[in-house]
Length: 332
Image 1 (cartoon, one colour):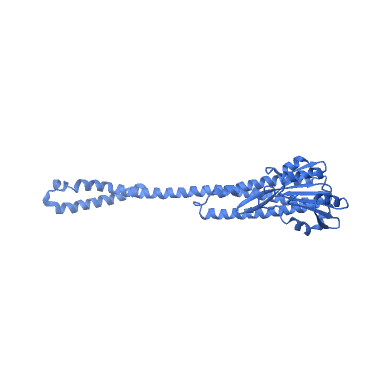
Image 2 (cartoon, helix red, strand yellow; image 1 turned 120 degrees about the vertical axis):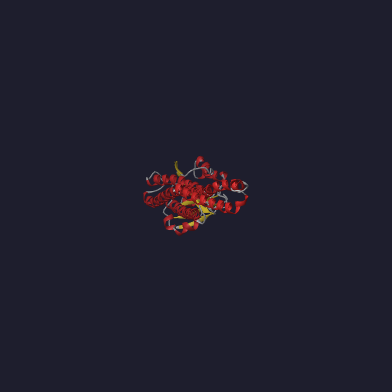
């Protein structure tokens, strides 16, 4: 099967790679167990396992369905687990499915289906070799090592998402008018995806710790409780971050309202000043229109213009000053 690696894990603590599945199954009969690491398989390639290891066709179908949520299902001879791996690159959260089949003498990991260039279980062989003393105790301990690695990667993605949230908060507070609210909507959408995945994964760990899986012995339960604690912590973090995003969106709306109110107040103040000035000059304009053309000759005669004009200008000044103080007092 292309893109697959077959391993025989010996009781003495050795990870031996074999060429074919049949060789791995035959070697497991003499001790140890088989681990099949299948990457980016097709449905036809996985269907071979239904006859060799008795996997249910519905489980094989779930492995190639990218819309599945994390879950655990028991079948005769094996238990099927769907888990999610997180990665956060270029301000984008990616959720990749990792499928696990655990039996009495085997563990199968299926990853990378519809993941593009991402490798959810990249370098997993080296990680298992570093903890081979635990892995050699059985498939349940090997599955714990793999799930623990996936959970560690979740923490890296959640930390990166937290950094993105802090950066968005700083940008919003620095320039609320130019801040793009779509960034907050994106963060909230990704946090909802995290919450959905973590909620179902927590239920998986609850069932395992409740000893519902017949292929996970009691001595391995303590290891899975540690994973449960991490998943619960991450779930609570996503809840907290989601509340923060909601608060920041409300704060952004409030800051925009304040900016609009400030702009409106400044406009009102300008209009008020212009209205005040216009009101002062309205009677002066009226007087200038009446007395500034020909009325001076009608009221005083042409011979008195040297007295009439200064008196007229003085009267306009007095009226303007009086109007100014009257309007000022009425405004107060």
